[in-house]
Length: 110
Length: 392
View 1 (spheres, rainbow over the protein chains, first blue to last red):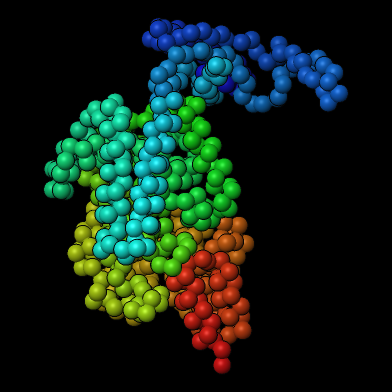
View 2: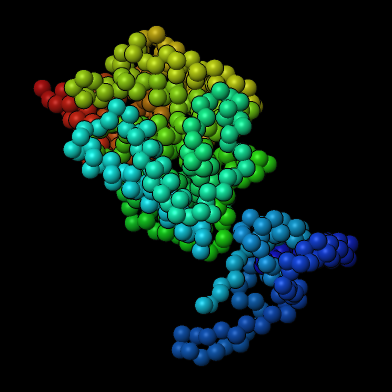
């Protein structure tokens, strides 16, 4: 589950919003503990560095995320779900006050 | 992957039934009720598959049986048929899962549940066959890879899924009502199957206004089935149809359902379409048609459902109310609609207004344009007859 959010809007919410989101994640982990396989919150995109390969194969290093978007990837959860309906039911519990959760199956190589 | 296997086997059953039908009918003639016959064959095929896969024989929750028998609808006679009913319901719910794009939901259902060819589905959607083939492949991959479950939604989930399922049933009926290609104007088997599905959904969700609206629309449209084509196979317009041969019991059932469906505010798109069909059905003759009422209903419908095809029908109704010149004016803004660029009814409607205005040269080139856009032989013959009538 890729958690996207509007960092500016979340920053505007101040400490109060941040602690509310934190509580949300604690509650989420509490009720979905056995399904959770991992996950992390990420630092703000202002800390991002992008390594990109150019047309000539040369690697360039630049400041900032790979794409400037209003909503940025803020963290992720790895979840074990039997099917998409269960995954969606879990995604609905992830706190994302100014954003969205993208649900993607993990690709398994045989 | 279990889902893929089930989806593919459902597809095979439908395909097999149509293949058997085609070869049998070419030697023995078409049975009285091809729809019922096809369903029986598809069921037998499905049962063979079910017997091979013992897991599929597990009875699902009695979601279908209880409300069906409560509504007095004939219960399936055998346990095995029952399994197939549930199977159809969970297949349609999988095909109509909200995680699939709406166009993919409808396409998949027509392809997998009804055995339409990709070309037929493409024409029903007004897109090219290759576009449709890619859309169907993508949808099947998403079902398999994302793990969209293959099961009947719980009673609590079902209403949420209804809108998508209704769109599917509606398009299925329209495709059956006017087959996009071939010799015969309608494919009764598809239309009958759509009505069966609508009746089943109405029995499951008797208080759902959208279901009642769609069911009413199908009944009221289908009530005219016997009069749409003349003895010579020629397409008959609403204006020419023998209203005594309209199916009174379908009309009565449909009109009663429209009343229920229109109680909700705002009324849904199917309830409004059904109301328009009811106005036609209740006019004793063509000249008695209440075009003011019909245009008023279209005005609301265009708001609820802003589709270019609805806008086209509204323009035609305006032409009937205010005369052919007003009709032409109303059609003009629609000529630029990309979605109507391959739609035969647009030039056909323009041709009709031009003909009534006596602008015969323009009318005949508009009929030619319409001819280039339909492969249905009955529709083509109608357009050719109109063309002939224009020559001096």
